[in-house]
Length: 317
Image (cartoon, rainbow, N blue to C red; front, side):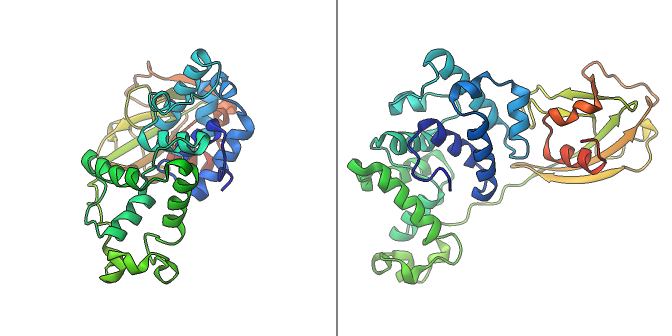
């Protein structure tokens, strides 16, 4: 992992934001791209929204990117592009919670703040036999109190990295290497032969089902697109003409979809139908929210993953 042992707060912050809700294998290439393209906070802050969202394309959870840009510009305008050096200042920044603030404070400045992520929770849950998942704010506070009590305050950087690495490589979610564990004699979960039961599994989220029908209306040179501005999924990303309906919009006189894709989000399951049209259907659609954009410029726009895959499948980008 290229951020391992990093002490630059900007790079630590960038890696932590990218790794929220993202696997290390996927996040690494994005991290490398961002630190090469935006070497400083100021360079990131000076980039356009469309450019940064395009570079973020495929990572999902775009609110992370939006908050990251806001914070970068705030630091450019108020801190001369420098990261603050105290925990209280760090946690006050938009998009930074307790875990990320503790990670930046300890890894960059060796400040005595304990990190609590899934790896840390798993280690403590098994070690003490704690039958409690980290779901609510109370759960978070509970595990934070344990982490704070065991933190090696003079070596916070090394301690936090060590316990996170231990959870990631030895005390893993599935098939942990208990035989290699130096703590197994005092580990409640191991001694009771119930390692797989700790921490308890979180309840599965019931996904809301939605059906999108996208109409790619173009004349061979330009296509109608809009940027999603409402708060919710895919804010600041581009999309073709959208009709949200459980059934195919027959009133448009459309035939079967040219492509059908599925996409699962954190709380939603989307069934997405795509139709390609080269002339305005009847009845005439209200396109007041849309703008005509050259097909040659589509590769410069940021799209949700499913739309990007559709455009690539039909060689529009």
